Length: 319
Image 1 (tube, rainbow, N blue to C red):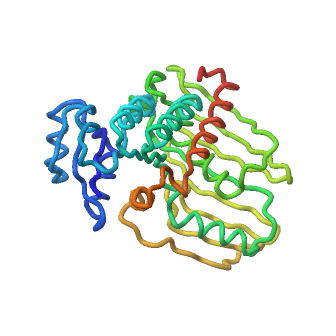
Image 2: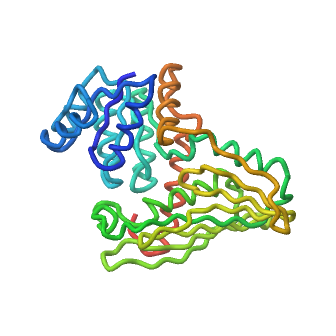
């Protein structure tokens, strides 16, 4: 299939490299806000078509799937543009700025009968099932506590610190912590509590979010834009614990008993970058005539946006 990339930033570069390494996809076009930037990107990644506007990219009927890699604040606008031209869309996380935008864009895609999915890569990776299989095996018994974290030193990045670009830790890295908890514990929780420290610019710089489940399980996720964290996810059970080395891109799963003795080690399959799984599923769904992902259904994207809306409202952030 012919893939077009909308946006020419760092995430777009990672996706371009990934697609060029895939045998079953073709990096057909790049769209940027300027022709100069599009041409440079196309030259670097050997792309045949370079468009100096997003409108030109969306209008190209030879594109089978558009991957949107623009800032969070522009996802809704750019998805709307692509859907208006009946282009299939895979949009980078966070899906939109808020739940209202997510619901509107999902309805529009359904009306136009085009494929639409959120590109949150951890939902598509084989590590997701591997982790759930280890939990289901009962090797550490009943799990009552989960912790996870994700933080990078990105407080100097413009799109992170500017409210008008939908900045902040939550939409950029916190979305992974929330998805990690929901993927592996489900949604049967009673309430969510949080604590936040805002930046001088008015976005969330770091936070801690706690999910309290009806069965007594508690899951805590922390996020920050001020420094790199260990990125681990840990499940604590009555007979031991499971350590996921990186919730943003798991490579290893290690299981220990209650005395810290290793019980099991699993390596996640080798990958190009990890981005390939969302592309492959999108192509598979499009070929099958389906309009959404199986790994990240649109209802789930709307749900996660709703969770983040609720948390931000408590912080006093307008959503």
